[in-house]
Image (cartoon, rainbow, N blue to C red; front, side, top):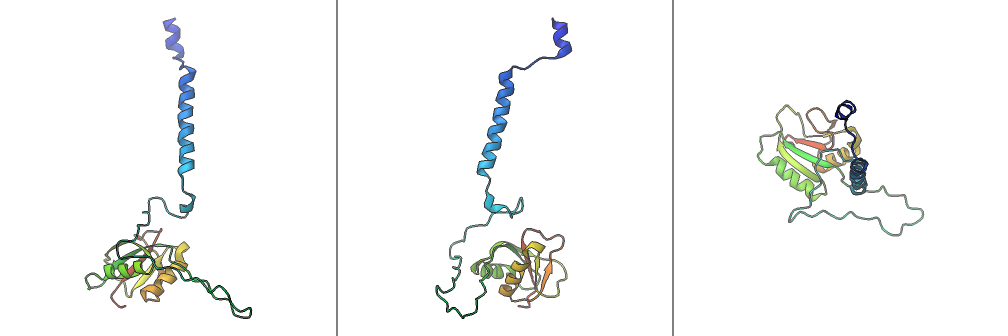
Amino acid sequence: MSRDLRRHGRALPSWTLLGSVSVVAVAVLAFLITASPDRSDQAVGSPLPSAPTQGQEKEPVESPPATQPPDAPAKKKATRPRAYVEVFNNSGFTGLAATAASELGGAGWDVIGTDDWYGDIPQSTVYYPQRLRAQAELLAGDVGTERIKPAVDPMRLDRLTVILTGDL
């Protein structure tokens, strides 16, 4: 008997197998229930938007008037800031990125970081991943520059990057 047991291995009781399958099924179900479908366009590993700090409130979006004359031209719907933004200082002015980040946060942008940028940037620029081009144009208007460019390495591709040169 012991020779036969060594040759064929040992069989696990069916309750062990059933218990393991049940644990995996519960884990998959819990994942599906708690997954947030409203963050489908957010990149994995990107930070969540932070709540406004004291004294920094989001401005309400203006709604169009309730009634318009039938012959009035349709107004273009205002676009709201919806992208994460990082602001970098590439000038000799201390605190430029922090000041701009505060102003952009007041305008409704989710500024998630500031830092210094080391490199040769000729003019203040908004860099964007392809899917955020429209948001980059909106941000460029808020920054006060017309220069927007596609993001390059080492810029993150889940947010807009603003590099300020002090020419604003």
